[in-house]
Image (cartoon, rainbow, N blue to C red; front, side, top):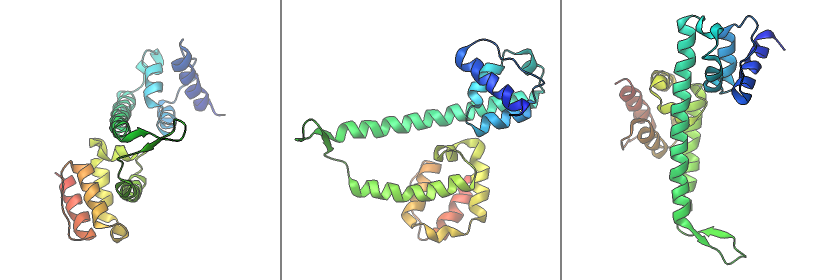
Length: 195
């Protein structure tokens, strides 16, 4: 294990157990990359923020940690909000079943669930192509230009139905749009993301 991985783990231990981290010649750029790769930038930033070594780090390094902390916290907030929406739907559609206390979905539209599953393919492809860790990261302002640039150069638009593109437009832009073709959807989305 290299020195910066040890520093990273020391910061993580500090975050989880309390107490100061013991660092040896910290390379904050490398520690940042490890934190971002493992989706732990908020935890590492919290553990490092009071350390003199972190305070002495260049401003742009501290800013990277802070920006990632804000982005990941915002993304987590959106995921939590989405989870609660699904949970509310679950509660509304849940009815006790006859089978020994097990339940079944009474009012869930399974065709819509299938549609949603198909839609995820386009969302996942876009998230993967733009190096977003989560689909919800596609909506973050700091990723908007990456999403736009990717859409402009992306060729498999026809692999996804027009309905999937309309769902993506509603998700990214927050408004309902209707498209006549996948290519039109791709172009309009790229154009609208430039605004």
